[in-house]
Amino acid sequence: MQLKSIQDVDLKGKRVVVRFDFNVPLTKTEPRTITDASRIDEAIPTIRLLLEKGASKIVMISHLGRPDGQPNPKYSLEPVAEYLASKLGTDVILSESAVDNGLRNLLQLPETKLVLLENIRFLPGEEKNDMELAEKLSQYGDIYVNDAFGAAHRKHASTYGINAFFKGRAYPGLLMKKEIESLSSLLEKPAKPFVAIVGGAKVSDKIKTIEKLLVMVDTLLIGGAMAYPFLKARGNTVGNSLCSDDDVALAKQLLAADKGGKIQLPKDHIVAEGLEGKPETCHTISIPDGKMGLDIGPMTIQSYGDHIKTAKTIFWNGPMGLFESKAFARGTMSIAHEIAGTKAFSVVGGGDSVAAVQQSGEASKFSHVSTGGGASLEYIEKGELPGVQALRFGV
Ligand code: 3PG
Ligand code: MG
Image 1 (cartoon, protein in one colour):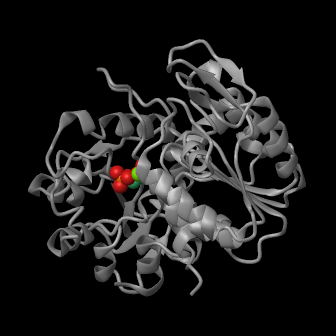
Image 2: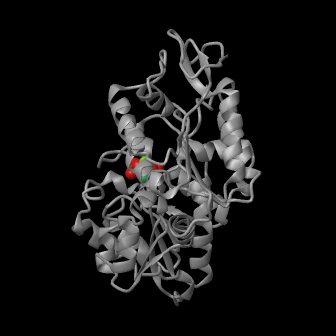
Image 3: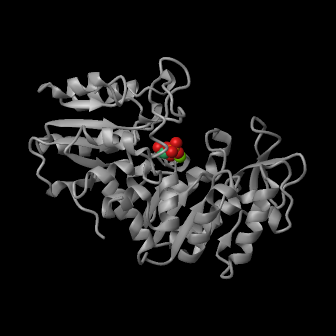
């Protein structure tokens, strides 16, 4: 079933409850400031649309981090409320709790317009999909909008259960719709060749998505620490590189399943004695004892680049190395530039790869930069997410 459009709804005088994913990275020390506001910036068009369409109240819900069901000032949405207020040029009231009487009274006042509820994960009911909490939240609005694509793989009270109280009155936000449309073009008749690039740390985190990608794509380029278990599974040595036995076993399974020989592995590496060590090029597939692989090498960059050049559809998740450190960033940056240089339909997802794309300065040349990491992987794996399914069919 097609997702509905919030543009088509009459919102004049209506109270709207909106779930956003304002789970943005913050500095580790006080004062906590936002280090990447992309997720908030991407939500602004939905807020503006609700305002333009004459909504009387906009009650915004989000989580931030994983405070495990209790209040913790470290995870307060205060920096988000401040950022929103400055971006929108209006007051944004941050409620002390997502459910309290003060808030009910506040919402009675005609001048109250934009309210951000404090971190919904301060309440234990959120992650348990508690229906009492869902019902309380539903009472703040006549209409429910879910724009939290990044959290749509979670079956929580504010992303899932709440739909039960908005039969026929639940809509995706603009960002949610854009995300689902972009990702579903990868699943439905992608132009070939389809090349996927998967990196990051652990095979176990992405195994289900990789299994699905092997069916969909023509070529699967593997990089980052993810590559070492695959190399070991093929009988190469990996020195001191990150490589758990469990991941080697999973990599063996994937290689056995890859009947079409779609998986490509690094042919050379940038290695060092440790994370702070001096980088050197390792020209062989096998990495010697005492060395740790931290990026793909120049031959691999060249060969992965050749695959990317021929692609008509590209999906990228996970960096090729420890790109946060300049010495080991070349592989990841080269992939970003290579994709930016194609005319292919290109989608990148996942916090680290998105940060790398931003760092490369080429984000605008990608067809779609997803705000969801886990959510985009799960959507590719399953073709649906609980939060989206609930919008389509209710709960
Ligand atoms: C994310 O950043 O992955 C989303 O906001 C979901 O957060 P979570 O992984 O803590 O559920
Ligand atoms: Mg996550």
